[in-house]
Image (tube, rainbow, N blue to C red):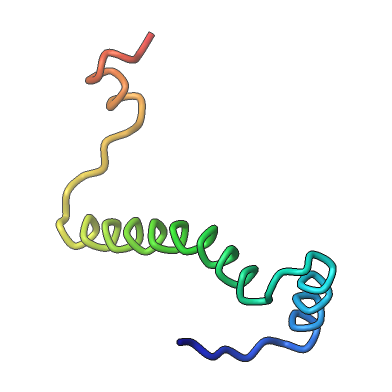
Length: 74
């Protein structure tokens, strides 16, 4: 179980939506988390990978070079 505090305007919007759709507020909170959580996880992984890359001291490879190596360049 999780308890959260929402700003008044957000809580009011959630209440209106729940009443209008006859769904519980928890349904919309779960939906919002499900739609957003994967993006947040991806952003965290990208940030972590970038920090590790910076620590490694490796040189970045320009996109056109990557495309050339993969045979994608014109």
